[in-house]
Amino acid sequence: MSFLTFIFRFSWNYKERTLKTTVLVPFEFYASYSLSIRETSHTHHWTLKLFVTGIPRNGMVIDILKLREITNPHIERIANTYLNENEVLDQRQAENPTCEMLCMYFFSHVAPQLEGYDVELSGVEVEIREPEGNEWGSARLEVD
Image 1 (cartoon, rainbow, N blue to C red):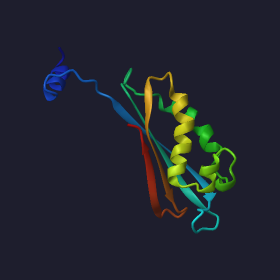
Image 2: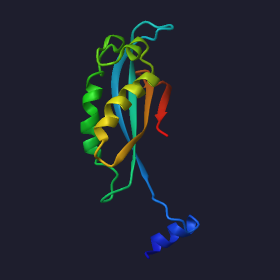
Image 3: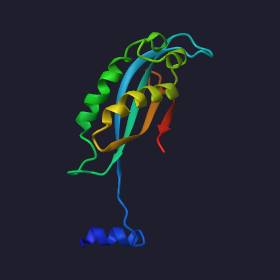
Image 4: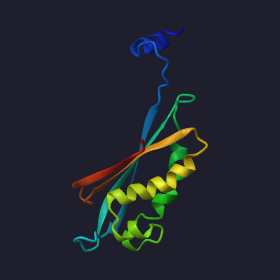
C-alpha cells in the first residue's frame, strides 16, 4: 500500500472510494442577440466553460486539445452571428437566446461527442459580458 493510498483510505474511514477530477476548459466568443422581453439587437462577449469529470488516466482526465477540437465547431456556428436568427439553435433557443438556453445548446452538442472517452460533461456555464468587460451574469447547467 502506498503512502498516498493509506492517507486516502484513512481520510475516508477506510472505505474504498474512487477519486474523480473535474477539468474546467474556457472558450470565448462574440455574438449578437435580443431578448424577447426588452431589447434591441446588440453584441455581447460570451464565455463558455465546460466541466468534464472523470478518472485521470496517464495524468489527465481528457486531452484539452481534443476537447477544444470537439467544441470549437459548435462555437464557430454561433460566433459573430445574430443568435435570434441562427439556424443551428432550436426554435426556443433562438427565440430567447439566454445564457440558460446556450448552456443547453452546448450540452446537447458536446456531451454526445464525449461518449467513448470515459468522461462526463458534468457542467456547462455560459457567462455574458458587455464588450467593454462589464459582466451581466452567467448560468450553469449541472448534471446530477
